[in-house]
View 1 (cartoon, one colour):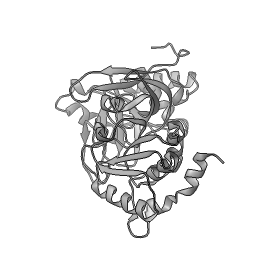
View 2 (cartoon, one colour):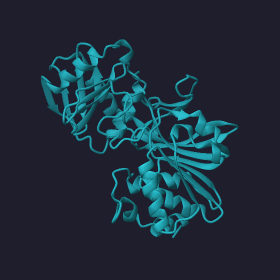
View 3 (cartoon, helix red, strand yellow):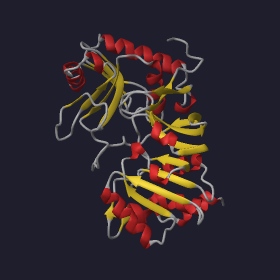
View 4 (tube, helix red, strand yellow):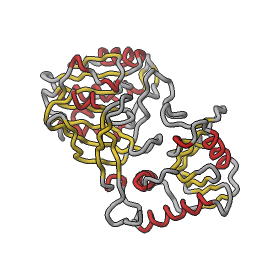
Length: 347
């Protein structure tokens, strides 16, 4: 048994996710993902840890156990209701070494900095400069970062900070809901960022397009979504259930300016190619849909799929990755970007 095993065994998960008084919360991460990311974080006794996204409070309790009596966990969330809920459950189970605060995660929590470790259970637009500034030299960040400006196209990055700059240690497939500026009940059905058109039906459909700068009125996005909702071509492809993150990373690495992502009737998502005049995506269940059998976008999509298969569906964590500095006024920091593996030189 390791200290990590002991910490997970000591914390009653259901007490946080399905509390008899406070009820069930949807604001929780998969326990396997929590274990994966806390393992990558390598928390040591005595560490000061910042947790961004308190959620149910389950992960906070595990972090507090790992830090021990001489460490400290500062956990922040945009939702005052979640902070109140987690605080009450921590008190009930006598979890110590924790400070919980209502705060915007993109700013970190400077008043308690600096930190040896930082972990985020939500996806910011990029790695914020504010986070890096608050981590000690040699410290570590584990965060879900976008690899292109489309929802749900993310990797989990393990980063160390040296001389005030982030350096990638590892990436792996994974994702969390987008960070939000205000508390929301549902951050998954319609993401708050990079949705270019949504029909706002009871079971909504939406589309995100990489060519949004060419579509200021969003008429192109609306037309592309309509073409996919009323597809004139449907064809079954190979199973995608275990390869969706690979496909997501591969298409992001291609960097095509017409890359697009859709969610259809709140049931299934797809990634593919759209333009003002054509649309084609492959859905997560392995179905290809397009506006017509002769769609120019369908031709592009088939080319992408052929090259992805030739590359043997590379693991999402195997793509070359880079942190690119971004100095814009909206959120200074670093964009995580992927490129095609060296064995795929078709682009």
